[in-house]
Length: 295
Image 1 (cartoon, rainbow, N blue to C red):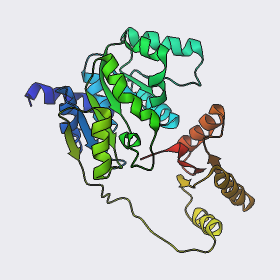
Image 2 (cartoon, helix red, strand yellow):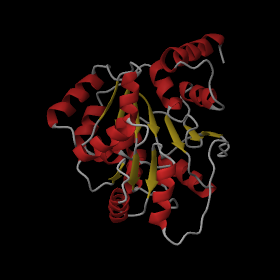
Image 3 (cartoon, rainbow, N blue to C red):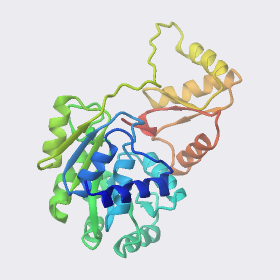
Image 4 (cartoon, rainbow, N blue to C red):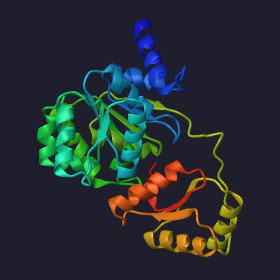
């Protein structure tokens, strides 16, 4: 790697994120994108996946199109990037026509470095027409395991991505995931149409994460006891919307008020408000389905 390139990367890292050095694999993944390679990054949750496309998006000319499965994730990322002084936007159905048109105009004029969309939007004819006028640098596919029918988070809409790439000129693609068996990895490569792909894999072992398993007779009572002792922010995942609401009601009935439920059945306004509260407080717990996160 030329010294000048490394200097630019480190300077950008320090200027926007305040770090002096990259984590393991991040620099190699970023260089692969700068070299216009299709790239697959298998990194653990919390392993710095987002930086692997956010930083090269700043260094390269044009706009990076980020395909993400969940609106909550998109909004959180865009909010964080704007706080860092980085031009980023997301498109979603909760934005009205005028707001979406403004974002399209900014993208076409080159004002946006990262544009976040759901995979479903790739099938939108207006979006396709607009993207043909946007100078795209590369495509980042977050939670890429969603493309595989072998994975538990399969999203059929992810299969639009390969066709989209062909339509706009087969831009370099960075696929990222923290959840992939060998069979899923093969599926990602094939269904995204990755060519001569470079693969980077980091151990999923996290020293700061511990997994405990308990056999209990009363889950709700155990959760109440745990949350009364541990007055910190967190997420409790449950399988259904009904369970999210019932567990929240049980906890509140037992004088635990710093909790709320979150699921896809809520309106956009309700989800936004609950997410904001969870982000701003250090003692707030969300009882949620996987609508709040993935991977």
